[in-house]
Image (cartoon, rainbow, N blue to C red; front, side, top):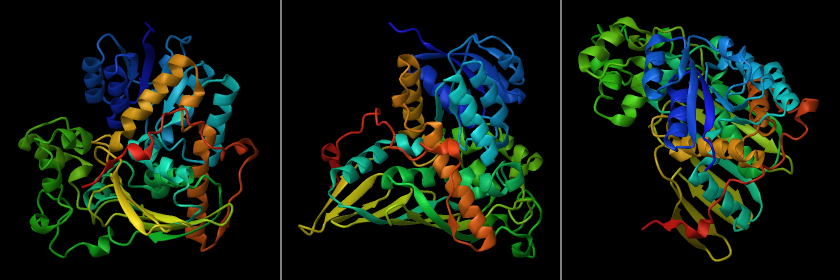
Length: 442
């Protein structure tokens, strides 16, 4: 029997804990040390991973000679670069939460450290790893659509999710994290490149912060939902959102766990009185866009339009792929494939699970951990679909889109010399189920 993979966890928040919990649940890994500066999260880790050493920061772990096989780095976006480089130099394989880093220079630094140390790094572009994605990829590779000509893709962030993470939450200010497009949508830019299978040549983009601004605050509103007479009828009521999570296991895991460990109404309301999550959405220090469109031209002439918006239901992404021989319409669970040669359409169920962090991103959270453990156990980097060079592409596209948005330009993508292999197809060692075995929807 293969020995379990020994893991370090750097950042025991909702994302890091999700990955570590999955690794342990498989029986193929054990967490032997955790670095977490927030006391309540550290205490949770102490109970979740019995026997693990608990540190209040990561440098003490990195200072030791290598004593584990791999590390999960799930700190805040701006705090990825130093631990990733330090643990790469110590010889650890790395599972790194997206985005890789907040600047191109730091991304290149991490990639350089990984390549020089000859360690594996998997970026958590979890959408690549879902059953739904595998099924869509198989359909495209079968040739039934012919050559891809254009794509429409929508990321429906969800009105309450945007308020939680990008108005009240940790990603509300670009300077403290990354632009919204990279923080939230590098998943989608990566996913589009994976499906189209060609590098992006040109990018344009438009978007702004339209709604969550002080001038849109109702005249009677106060600065917090806890005292506001408008709160009962406000779509962005913190009381309704977070108290409504109680009793729902997925919603308690996320987003409620980000706000408070309390699982009572009084505990939740007390947290809203004393934390940023009770603030009026029109009275925060946020500056992230609440809607954005990105237009992409790929090598060979195919195009894609991507829309990210806060003002939607909370749901799976919606995608339409148009080819020379057929069309695919997908909603994250079901796809309808229309064959122009026969005029017939067939609807297949490909996906499972919900779209968000609380429900595991349609199985992607679990699958990327499984693939990473496979890679570490077998020393086979081909198990990883989101290696650093491949993942760099979506980051370069996001930064080009931001330049285009700010400057009113059409940006031609340029890639650093180290990114020469950024657009190669992933090795595909992760099994992709044959779409003909998908379940027809009745």
